[in-house]
Length: 306
Image 1 (cartoon, helix red, strand yellow):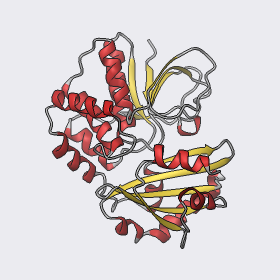
Image 2 (cartoon, rainbow, N blue to C red):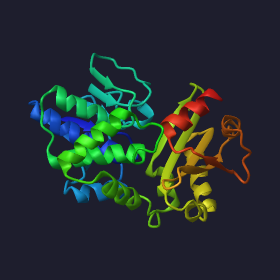
Image 3 (cartoon, rainbow, N blue to C red):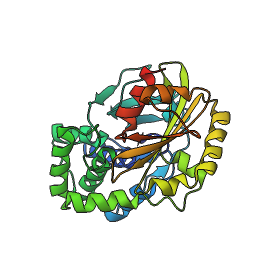
């Protein structure tokens, strides 16, 4: 039997990886032959999570074709998906983002307006009466902590927090102690090149169906430490503008301790950011107090101001 492949988006984050592993486990328990995959390198936060719960990283997947059956988690946009996705047979989508999806054949689509894909997956485990083992529960908990910045992000819902509390009991971890250690593990950016930084968690969008954009985000405990590399980061961003034909390239540096962000903005449509946040870009940068969520506080705001 040909295995169904389940994977998240390019430049995978903790939710993308955890959801892939958890979904594969669930489907295998339901009698399907499913294997998790990843579409990019594992970041340091996710590496910390996998090591903590002693689970190996999924194999890297570079492309799919007409012979592949797939399940998408934590994304539904073609620009964020694997090469060749238009040829593959999409059997299911589990997501928590705005829907920008077209399918050529019937499929299962599960999405909720919550902070994390693993919150949606928790419901699917319960609906199918499948017990979540401690290590998988730990991964799912980690994804919720990551996507909600330990419940500080405006994307966090009561459901995310309740599910996280349930998963913490299964995984036998203290949410705050573990969560802070996990988030801090992901803020060490010293070993990454500037090209890697702008692609660690970079996603492409077509804002308002007309502006080609890339919005990248890194978490840190020290914005100044990242801004010290601003010149080289801008060089990497300009390479992406040329290679991806972007009109707007946004690099969000998010302080997970104080819940603020510094933004570096390049491209012919950089004025969209100024209009959206009532700021003036000085040397291509501005401080955005209280802005931490790309999904809720950046993408829709920029879209509305295109």
